[in-house]
Length: 326
Image (tube, rainbow, N blue to C red):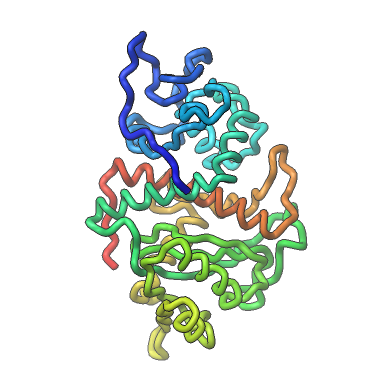
């Protein structure tokens, strides 16, 4: 979708606001008190400088109606990051943040308009460019992992993975060669990898037209390889273990997506790494009520994954990224 972005902090003629976000400069955010940044999830000044140009210009500033916003954009993002990092409910938002209802309304509005995924994609493109790569990837890696579900997860959206002996849900992801998320989907654990890959790869082709090669494990063999070539003009290359391999062996290309799965599950490598496995157990509406629809749960989890990976990517933009040798 076509959006306008503020590329540079504007010059304000009156007293300098405490923050250079659009809500402070043009809106009514100055009417609310500032907060002291005290939590590990709060953005640093360097992270805010990298993120601010990527934020969408609100409708009221473009003359499309609505009242000027009354809450600082930086505080709102810090509140979302705090909620995601701590795994709390919306109503448990600390009092030094804006009211939880305001924060949730912003998050919901961004999610419904696809701004969370777009924000994540723009950050991912900046990370890739800093590694001397094109912003849009040309190859990806697909994988799936079953995750145990909490007792509060409804039976209509959970299943039993007989191969892994896990009851719950299964996350299906495609990453680029740096292990950065491209597309995400969530199904019940009893859904096969090949069945879920059909819709996932279709969405991958629609969102990333430059992708022409996807690596996969042995669970994606069979008619799926021919279907990808004929229907999507996409090469699905299966990387298998050989019979003489014993114990743990790092397989070419495949290890990148395994690192991504480990980050999702255990939060390794970086304190800001994705905690989407926590969100797998927290597909809640405000107030803690579980969403019962599979499609809404998948969409909800994808939005959380994007927002959490956006937090990680913002740190990788301002901190020299670790080059992953593919």
